[in-house]
Amino acid sequence: MHAPSRPTKTALGRGLLLLGVALATASGCAAGGSENPPAAATSTTPSAGGPGGSTEPATPSEPAAPAAPALPASCAAIELVEGSRITGDDLGRCLQDFERTARTGSSLVRLTPDDPGVETQWLHADDGTYALLTGRDGGDRVVVTPDGGASEDDGRWVRADAGGSPDEQLASSHVEALRPQVQPDFQAALVRLSDTWLVEGREEVTVLDGTKRSLWRVASAKPVELVAGMPADVSLYMDVPGATEVMVSTGGGNTSERLYGAWGAPVDATAVEKAVAQALDAD
Image (cartoon, rainbow, N blue to C red; front, side, top):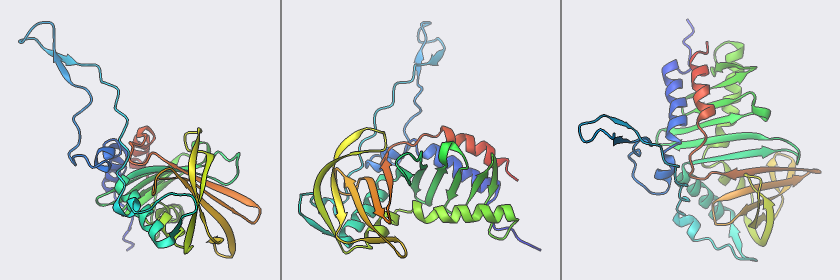
């Protein structure tokens, strides 16, 4: 008898709920705050009836902007000064440590300038990485949990199971293709493909929120094969070491970019909460 390896509804639901709810408080942990979750935003205040009267909800206050993640020691040791050289190992270690410290983040991958892109949001929790990928124009999402996942096909959620039905096997291929890309060492592994990176000064580039910023350009000293047999010139753009905001790859006549942001910040949980209800009903 086939014993399915797919996660149960409880396990998948827990993963999705953790992604949707914990992201709302993870910025406090990323900034070095208490590991205890903050109190609910809605408090109660005495009514006009006096001390013996009932209580009623106060108007929730606007949430404060999250503090930027603290720089780990491996990043503080790197100087972004025009003309300086950084080894691939040092830069990779900084990027990996920064992402672990931030705990949350998001990225948008565009293959051409007019590409709407594919968005990914993630949380590096104590028990592993949770992520939600949203396809172009909001379609075909993929959820990754530490021990499973699910993908959406034409509005229908299917749990990943490499030994299951054809649909479940396809879902598994989507989940496992995304899994390595949302791990803290993904950026670091790409950077370590080059032994040396050069700080080439500041340039104005478009970042994730659509605005333009002047950022340090840190370029590989040699072409990098992000795809086997296809060397490309790769540059990272950042304002402080570790907090990559843009990665640009140019090779074979094509230019692609990955825009990063929301380091250590809460991630919009609305889409995730909707995915929870749909994924829990998936067959």
